[in-house]
Image 1 (cartoon, one colour):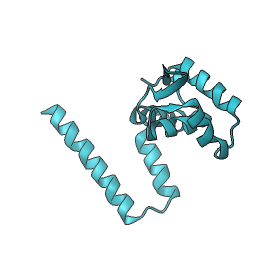
Image 2 (cartoon, rainbow, N blue to C red):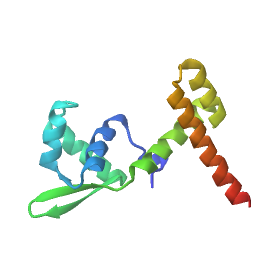
Image 3 (cartoon, rainbow, N blue to C red):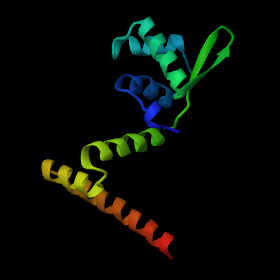
Image 4 (cartoon, one colour):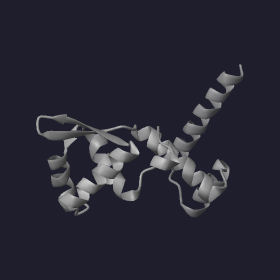
Length: 132
């Protein structure tokens, strides 16, 4: 579970993206993948892995001489926690204020508008089902 105490920092997202894409990954594999983008040294990767393990967002298993790293939190759980945090910080917890701001500041395509309608319809259907 993602909490404010173990929310992901910007740098931690790089590692989590790799682990959500394919796990497990070893320290050497992660070093190789993160060398060019974002340009991290081996010591930076090691520090990040240690910090993230302590926070509980990743875990490792020792296989032979290698540590294999796994995500300990689901991508969807992190996304929901991040969205809730943003909503509270920037929009006083108001989803309608957030949507109003986004709609006023960005020209939405017809496809995006239809997608938003579908999301709202699904939410309404779920809400009706809970009230039945």
